[in-house]
Amino acid sequence: MSRPIYLPFADGQWHMSMGLKALNLDEWIEIDDRFATELALKERLLKEQYPEVFACLPDSQASQKEALELLTAHLCHRFPQHYQRQDKTIENITTGQVWASSDFEIAPLDLAGRLVQEDLLLMQPSPEGYRLAAASVCFPLRWRLQEKLGRPLSQIHSPVPDYQEKLARPINSFFDRLKCDRPAWRLNWSIVDSPNLFLPPNSGQPSVHTAITAQNAGERLWLRVERQTLRRLSESGDILFTIRTYLHPLQAIADRPEMARNLGKAIEQMPLNMQGYKTLLPIREALLGYLHRLG
Image (tube, rainbow, N blue to C red; front, side, top):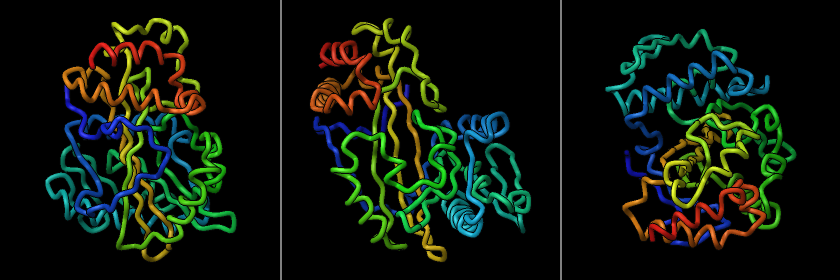
C-alpha cells in the first residue's frame, strides 16, 4: 500500500482558505506508479462517456492549443523517458500511444488531458468573472462538467458553504493578479466511500454507509486528496487549472497515530454545513470512531 504524499490536515486544523503556495515549475506535473493505469482509465471514459468528461466553448480553441503546446513542451523536457515529440505527433513511450495533433484541432485540450494523470480546466476572463471555457475532467469529485461549462467562478462554487462570504473575493483577486511566471498550487481533501476516481454526483450508496463501522472504516473509506495548480497562459491570458487526484485507503494512515488524531481534529472543527457538503455526515461517527481508535 502506497503512503500518502500529501496530508493537508497534518496540522490538525480545519481551514476555510485558499492555502496557496508558490509552484516550482519543475514540479508542475507529477507522474507515479499509477501512470499507465490512470491513463488507460481516461481513455476508457473518453471513449464511453465523452460528453461527461470533456467539454469546451467554441471560442476557446486558441487557448486550448496554447495549453497543449505549453504542456507538451514541458513533458518532453521534464520527462523524456515518458514522452517524445516528432513533427506533429507526440508519443507516450510508457503506453506506446502516439497521437497526431491534427486529430484534435477542434479540441486540443482533449489531447492534453490524455497525456497526463491530471484533469485540466481552462478559465477565461469574462464580464462576469473568470468562466470555465474548456475542461478534460475524468476524475470529478461529485460534480458534473456540463453543469459548470461556461459559468463564472461564483456560480461554479455556489454549492460550497460560505464560499461567497469567505472565499469569493480573495479567489477573484488572486485570478486577476496571477502572473505567468508565478504559478501556484494548493491542496484539497475529502473522505469518500468509493475507490473510484470517476465519482459523479449521487454516487454514494446509503446501504454502503450503514455497513461502515469504526472497526472496518479503514478498509471501507478512502482518503482523496486533490493537488491543484494554477498557471496563466502568456498569449491568451487564460488560466490553466490542473487537478491531480490521489486516492488511498484510509488504513494507509493506520501506522501514523498522530496523523489519525489530527484528521479527527480537523473533521470535528469542520462546520456541519461543510460536513454535509463533503458527504461526511452519513459516515461521521464511524470515521471518527476509527480515527480515535488509531490515535
